[in-house]
Amino acid sequence: MDWGIETKCIYGDGVKFEGDKTGSISFPIYQTATFAHSAVGQDTGFAYSRLQNPTRQQLEQVVASLEGGIDALAFSTGMAAITALMELFRPGDHIITDSDLYGGSIRLFRSISQKNGITFSHIDCVRENVESFIQENTRAIFIETPTNPMMNVIDIRKMAETAKRHGLWLIVDNTFLSPYFQKPLTLGADIVIHSGTKFLGGHNDTLAGFLVTNSLELSEQLRFIIKTVGSGLAPFDSWLILRGIKTLPIRMERAQENAQAIAAFLQGESRVRKVYYPGIPGTQAHEICKRQASGFGSMITFEVESARLARHILKSTRLIPFAESLGGVETLLTYPTTQTHADVPVEVQRKNGITDCVLRMSVGIETKEDLIDDLKQAMDSFG
Ligand SMILES: *Cc1c(COP(=O)(O)O)cnc(C)c1O
Image (cartoon, rainbow, N blue to C red; front, side):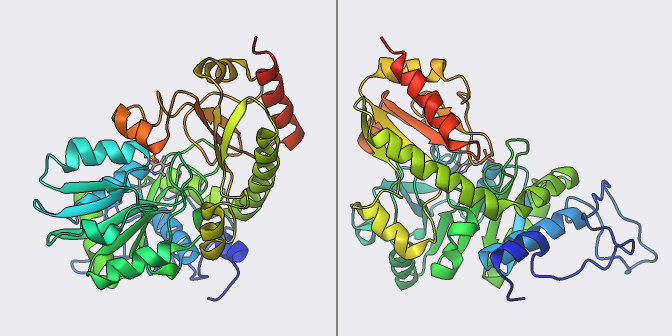
């Protein structure tokens, strides 16, 4: 159905699940491993929860409708989703990735996929010519936009054109903006990834991951992989993410409003050297983001004048926890160089701009003045 995104966050595409006759408004949690058959060759559409479970199916239908995909698959974590995705490739295949990616993805590629015979070119998709890295065995381009943590914005339409011209898949990790602000499939991507742990779940209480596609062929291949490798999301966790998504639009709007205010505050602080936030006008990231997304999100990376100050802020905030993860109602501060990106080789970190002066903040939905006051007192108490 052609509903608005707020309605879709609650009802998906409106297809009713026929299995429940109680009228329950909240989708039931089918906490079962297996399903009975009435006779050989007859089933209810469900056989065993590793293959599919009604609660997971409902969640997948909602996420597919939000991204404009024909199918979405829910995994136990974002990394489980990306690991399953890598099963699409064979030894000898080559993948082009942006060098600024979530640290866990880089670790997977460097330590596991490479061992399995897949090779990578880690390039700068904003400043380098992607086409010149395409080889005979290249199968896909893998990007995040905005990138984690440096908030570079990659032109999805341009990447999709390049991918199409060479018969490659364009894979986009859309975790940072969520389908509320950005829908890569509608811009030409073939597969969208989410860490559902982040904005979709939204409450820092559940891990989940998604792969979404609008290709029937990819959907069939991924369905075979999820039932074979067995990393699908459990019924209760599916329900938690379903509940989180219902408020995605109002959370995204409020967090973005807070992020705009905090970015402006940080820009005015003399000990903050640089603020990376696509919502700040006058940058290439801002211009590209405006063309392909309906918002700038609530992730801010900023560089302070010294590593000592960065470490001081992390231990001096009273309201904002120093914790990994992002996309929840709670504002969190992280230190990419020792946390999310610790396994990224130091020379790659430095090349991308990740130094020991760089902090990343996921802005939540608290009262914005409280967040600013907290950052201010943490900076002002630095000797
Ligand atoms: C967190 C994250 C992941 C990994 O997701 P998990 O749910 O933590 O496994 C992947 N990509 C991005 C951009 C992330 O932020």
